[in-house]
Length: 591
Image (tube, rainbow, N blue to C red):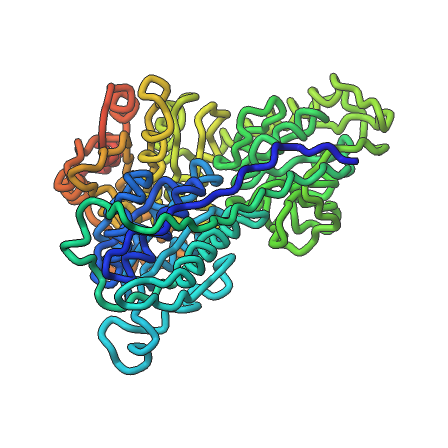
């Protein structure tokens, strides 16, 4: 017989809510009580009338402050704040609450990111009851199923009885939220959507809002708890002297462990979570472009093992993983594994390397592949020399690239972030700058790379900072830093506008004032006329961004890029916004 891996958890129950003369509030109390019992600790509310029962439910005696409430005036910012709150510990997701109508649509971007990043997120949207739908009622639209295939579970919960929720209605609501939380945090984590219909009255009667009635029934409601499935068992994948490990976004320590166990070059993105590996090859994109352009290049791999979600480099996603002579093995436990070039020959949920015979060249000269070694006992010295050949060539290729001031600013933030810091990356250009030029880091690095988007990163960083404040002791917590471009800095800056009773996050927002955005002056727009770019793709001046941040109560100022390292070294508390601008010495002037 198999031995149990964990003790059997005891049954969970919650008390039936005290009657409030509002079935909507009764149901909301039961929902929050069940979620609190299951471990949910954070909720972000966007103000609205139809969602009022959920606000009263959070304040009820039965919930008793077990769920921290955060209020954001904009639904989009609220959703990304909740995403950040839940991203630090995916086992404890956050909920976002909106009223009915167009408010629901504003959550769509965050739901998309949660889906592609596999981040648990509980979406609670208030709605009109069935009798008010499809008849032109105010703030009423087709909310049920609005997120379609993006969510792991979608339920349109009928409205409870107006004056008091019945026992069946309460059990249905509690069972549904338990199932939703299990789906959000299950084997394929992601967002779930509960569309909650409420009838008037939406608030409790005044006489029912005081102390609990001692004569109330002591009925308890069972809360379903699903035990998580065990981690998948590692499966063997082939490795030899011409294998590289690719660590995309969220690859985690498994990528570093696999590369180090076999002495394989590790090509890791900034947000891979694998940047402390001994086999790490920093600054690899320029070299890989050269390697994959030459079929006879001595460093050319013949196998790539992919962990995480590669999104940044065309040399990785297209040239390496799309090459006809490179075998691609994907390590991913989920059904939507990444394989952009559609060349993966094998997909395993977890991996352990299995050495196979190789046909490499003599490794005595720099840049040459190590010779074939015994399949079970590769020569560690030869593998170390092979990794070092990659590093030396990568450093040389990166040194040949120009390094504009924006890259120097990004590197200053990277180098200032230590082992207790959390660095959030929110700009496509700046993330690529770091991939091309940054070395290893002991900081935790997070970016919106599931969908490879940059939307909502400011609010997400605020949520991450709040989650760290709730989890870590003050003496153990470093700074949370957000590196963002001017193009996106104002998208959801209202996500940093906190309520009077809410703690202000310890967060540095470093905005690189690019004066129009490099993404529009390069890449696909390289041939665009400058006048066109100035007309349609200009962004607010750095002074404007700093002024808006100061209006939100932040310590905000503009500074030149050369002054950024000193500013980052200053002791800081609360919210600080540093708008980084081009050094005056680099600006051409008329004589």
